[in-house]
Image (tube, rainbow, N blue to C red; front, side, top):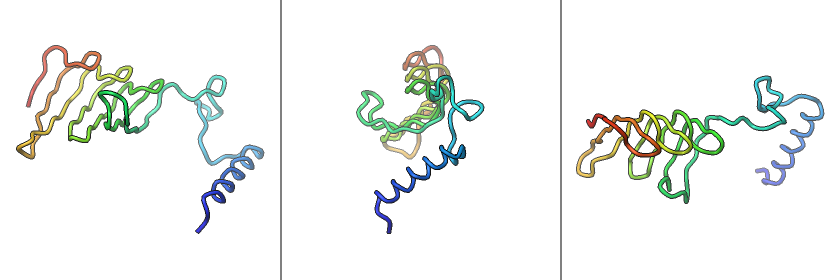
Length: 129
């Protein structure tokens, strides 16, 4: 079994060799693969993350589109208690159309709310199934 330091050193040396030889086995940002404006990472991306200490999202897992470090676009938010929100997000909040599933405690069923959201809150008419 290799020790972690040896693996880390080997990977670092491999990355340096690839950079010096103009070859790589890892993607770089940008359309052409050569980096974005000034070598910056893309503003939007698809990513999964489990929130640890962040207020109302504490212990929730989010998988979907991100923009500038916040859920933004299409995504799925899942809490440990079984609640799920699938839909649109804007700047870290539910915003646009979304479906919220809330488990019933006494049964193996969910309440399903299909509605529009505005800045993290239900807004307007919706359907409860």
